[in-house]
Amino acid sequence: MPLSEHEQRLLEEMERNLYQNDADFVATVSGRRGKPNYRLVVIGALLAVAGVAALIAGVIVRQPIVGVVGFALMLAGVLMVITPGRSADSTASTASSTSRAARAPRSSWMSTMSERWERRQDERGE
Image (cartoon, rainbow, N blue to C red; front, side, top):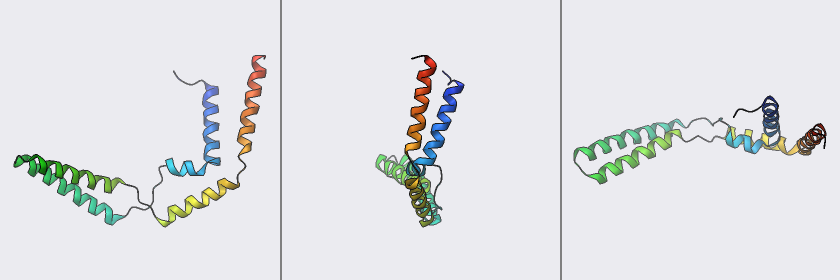
């Protein structure tokens, strides 16, 4: 069931307030990543290729343990490649945005929401 126009506007405003008031949460769920560590990317790619080779070798020689080890190597290599890198720059930007969020008044959002609630109650006639 789609949201009404009023609900969409309310959701968008809540999202804007979340981005303004809770920088820690935004930093956690945002798509921003640190600079990739190319050394880890290359090692992970080589590990994944070695894992595929071991998996195929395990199938050829009909040894399940070799195939399982190959799969584990392949999985470890892929995880190494896709894991986000952490750099000093991203840590510093998170710390500065956290300090900005700590200075921002948090009660304004609550007062806005309570005012809206009261307006809705008045519109209903209660």
